[in-house]
Image (cartoon, rainbow, N blue to C red; front, side, top):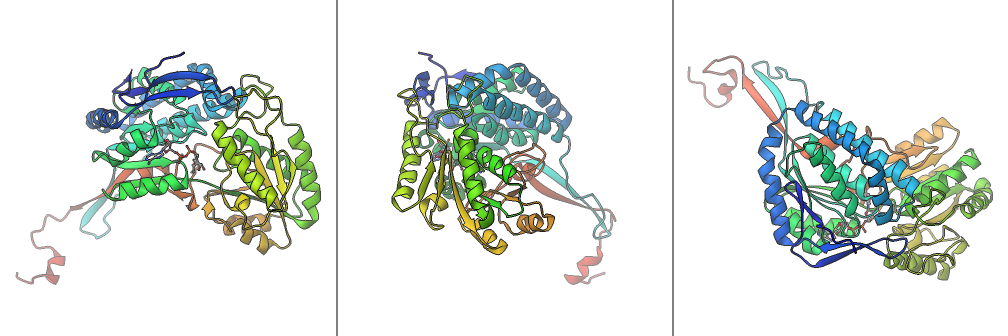
Length: 495
Ligand code: NAD
């Protein structure tokens, strides 16, 4: 049994004072670490450490913060093997995905924000009134309370922490209690790179025991949350009481629209990759494919063939394409949705089962392809967060866009066609924070990620993330030196 101090407060690991936690490997069910979880007292200690660190950190030059963050990226690169191995085991990710996507993406993000720290922008200073010089100061908010989910633990920690600290804030991040291990390594790498103690703190505990006291703590200036829409609403309500700034990255139900002039092979491959990445536990995963009727049968047949070739296996095996779901409880939820779809008349073309070969305690689920579901059914409307693709036909372009927009969510979408006018119209008309054209899933550090509608608001990654983590102050300086200003006439006219 690997007993660990699961809190990282003031630059060092320490034990929590709350209930014990067991961290398990989703692929085998084995316990990989145990330790005490955080409670309200730990949350208060972490916030105090972050508050103590704030003045010094915010007062450093952007160049000084940038240098330390470049060093952080270097340390992460050096430790990338360990990070990938830990992420793979704790989150149940195939080692190729953990290394080439999660860890590589996190290092790139760190390097990006190291550079961006020196590029905070605002309107040009100028004499807009003629008599004053106006300038913009972009100032950090203070202590940021961040809450992250389990599906991409390392990347979610990076998306929350990096823009905040690059802008001069300090952070207390609560990862999911299921997957804290890579986040702790990420924070330790920051300290090894020279970030002062208290700039980054990690609280490992449940939402109720650790998350809620963090959100409600009066010294937390802003709450940055990534997770489900249901919990996001609760977090937003708690933050509203104290008029805290809130940033919400919530669920998704991405449509995948295939017009009849699309490359059928590219679309089928894109759908399989887009639906099965991270075993479908991706907020931007392709979950609803709408395929124009002339291509429908061919598309379904090819997706089924390709799904048959996806290899499930141990996460440490480089030959494994798809790993398990995060837990057996989550697999039950996914399977329940597939079963209810089947019972209501949908056809399960592939999968919909627990594979026979898996270790008894592993949370594996077969790649699943469904047709014949109703647009208003649960499987089309609600987030599944599993390796399940539903394919539905459409006839006209307008119908496709209406169907694509017909859920509460609006995080991401894709449109597939060789006709530039069609894809341009789709990118205009689909209401989502990201629309891919002839691809689905790729992300880059330079571009924002964030939702419309119930998928939340606020942007992660890119320079747009600075909007979230800074206050904009207008400084307006008189340049005339006159005691009697012309505008005083509207109040009093005495010479
Ligand atoms: P979740 O909402 O159950 O939990 C998210 C985090 O909130 C966890 O750390 C949890 O402990 C914490 N939490 C729970 N109750 C809380 C409370 N009352 N107060 C404070 N914190 C609390 O989500 P999950 O199951 O961990 O993750 C999956 C969800 O995350 C999916 O809905 C997915 O779409 C979403 N997600 C969104 C994005 C995005 O960028 N929009 C990215 C990744 C995941």
